[in-house]
Structure formats: structure tokens, C-alpha cells
Image 1 (cartoon, rainbow, N blue to C red):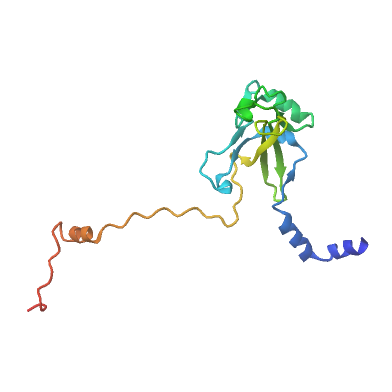
Image 2: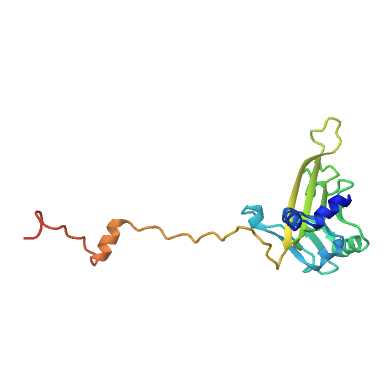
Length: 202
């Protein structure tokens, strides 16, 4: 171990390579309650889709109102208590009474859930990872609910723009080229261009 530590201390190149390799790695933040200080919005450049972005508005939601997370609804005060006490933001349809909204529309099976985790990376960027799982019992062997689909979304602070390495804005579309005949008419005052006489100028 001592030899490894010495090699690490004596090799700036090794430390630099490890830093570059791990700077984009995400891990859960120690202070999950920090997510309450911001509004979060999905970054469409990362998602590469034209669908409406998922948003979670902690900061803009009044304390006594319901927080919305893609159909899930929970009083903001209850979420605040979850996070301040050191817990996590985890919502679950335990009884199936909300299954028709969050899970299968046919059977309303219980078990569907939604989890939101504040993550950070070595560059100091923050994101909110929202994971949702839907349960259904329509086709299970014994009629018990089972997980049938899961989705995850990366949201960033709404008033901050995450870095896009190598990203460039799309070029503006160029106007369509006009027909050559129309261009000729425009250049001659609206009259067809006259052809030169046969045999050239006399």
C-alpha cells in the first residue's frame, strides 16, 4: 500500500488521468434536502427528443401546495419532512388506490413508485435523477403485481445551463433557392431574357 501511495503522489499524470476519467461520474449528494432550493427541468439537448421536458418545481411551489412529478402528487411540506430528517424522496402506491393514475390503467395494481435523488459530480454540477417504475398484474402467473416498465430522467437546475462538451447550436436553415427562370425574369425587369442572335453579333 505504501508503494502505491508513493507512486500516486509522485505521478501528476496518473492523478490527472483519473480526474478526467471520473469528473463526469455522478453520485448521491450527502445533503438531499438541497433539492428543495431549486426548480428542476429536463435538459432536451441531453435527452435528444422533442417531447415536453419533465419539470419539478420545489422552489416555485408554495409550502401548502402539492408538488407535481409527472403525475405524482405529494404535499410539499411532507416531502420537506422526508428530506430534512435525512430520508429520501420516495413515493409509492402501497394499496393500489392510485394505480390507475401511476401504474396500469386496467388493473390498478399497487407497487408503482417514484424516486428523486440529488446527485453531484466532480465538476461541481448537480442534477436531479427521477426514476419511476410501473407495476401491473394483468399478465402475471399468479395475479401478483410485477414491475413492467421503468424510466429515468436527468433534470438540471432550471436557471443553469449544464456544460455540453462539443455541443454547438444547430445552424439556421438557409432559405430555399429560387427557380433559375424566376431569377432571370427578376434581373430583366420582369421580362424574359432575350437570346443572342444566331451567329453572334454582326
